[in-house]
Image (tube, rainbow, N blue to C red; front, side, top):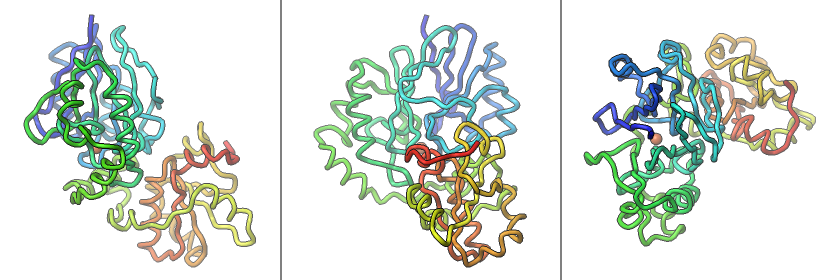
Length: 345
Ligand SMILES: [Fe+2]
């Protein structure tokens, strides 16, 4: 038996239905298509057992809390996903079971730090890591063209040539390719060194995706735009940042910053813990708590979350409210852990 793969959207932006033994998974479901997915699952008598994301998307709304609850299936994403809506974090090499069949996770950072590909029954779902005749852009925060080149050439291009490639996007009407064809003909990689690829990707000059303002911060935070009042993307991107080591040093100085942790309460006391002395203000409560922070308008404030994405939004909200010295903890609590710094739970 193998896992059946079917694309459901018929648009530039692709969602795959994986099914085996009566069980189903949706890969990269798009919120707009939620009703269609429910109809398809019902019509096929499939039991949805998981929602797999290839990465945190910037170009469309992912399923929100309400849709996720209605489907009743856990969300699977890479450890470095910034989203609080993830139920199962995976690392490269992880194996996920669907209807008794194995889906292998490949960690392929570059487009985003949390990009993964899913290897399924002679095929590979490549997300935005490898597109047909292309590759996903690397110019968003956390993007890394060198890492992407390594992931494609060392992980994807070493799969058997006959492996079928299903990307998360295609703008030319293609539906699939193979590893062999991409290895020979993909103009981004064919005959190009790592340095040449990095140079190429640094000069694509692409505009922001049309829906980035409406979708990215919603996807990163799990909150709806009306509940938070998200700042402009350009302001978020411009927020100054400190590394985990720098924040730790400043906490021990004579004028320590206030650490504002904008995650959910369960994350604050969860697996990653929090920095001792930090103040928990979930992102959707920030606007209401601003008066309590008035004493910090001219003092150093460090915003903290899981991966540094939600906190960047929080920091831009604080700047918008007139706070002058706001810094993002680069990479969030994941980076704090990676630096081996102490945590409280
Ligand atoms: Fe993407």
